[in-house]
Length: 250
Image (cartoon, one colour):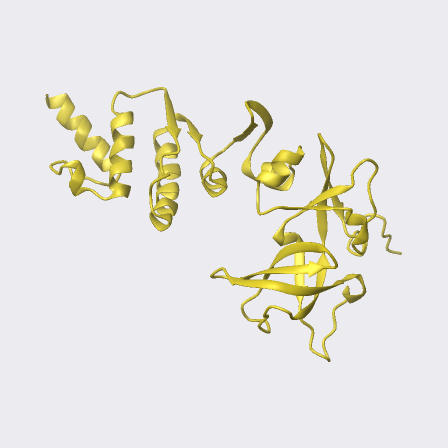
């Protein structure tokens, strides 16, 4: 009994809840219950910890706090942990290594930065990030169709949206597309803008301190890069106006 009391006190301290040992489960918040559940799993000193969507039923703000706490706790105790989730943010924030599966098949294994910036398959490119698939991307300025790859994926961070005033200048204005705003949504630290380039719908971010946009406004859109895809592979294609790989300085 003495060992049990010591172990309980140790684990409650570890999960940051040293004063809740006498409470009943219905006296705890959702976030506290998840911390206690982890303490319970750690009690027998396992060599491997399995977590299956542990924060699925938790409010968004608490879930974000718990992700940071879980990562710090696992680093502290040093137990190998397998974390199953459908939430991209959770995977990217918590994991050292991510395994993306599709219909029981492993699509890609890598650290969060590799998975996000260098997707190896079309499924990964579409799954990670806020991706939109477009057909016949050769219609866009600065892009030519790669052999065997007529479809492409564009993420919001690949897009720059501008609403020029008469006197404004942009060095890549000649490589920009004319577009019409379809929808504007406030996302806290920026606006999310959906715009139409001919019949191609794209979504990008627009800064809070820029001139406000509304549905029907005409804008200029610079697509910096995209992922070209076929059935099995994906490659990064940079807008020719921005590609300096063949630029030589004398």
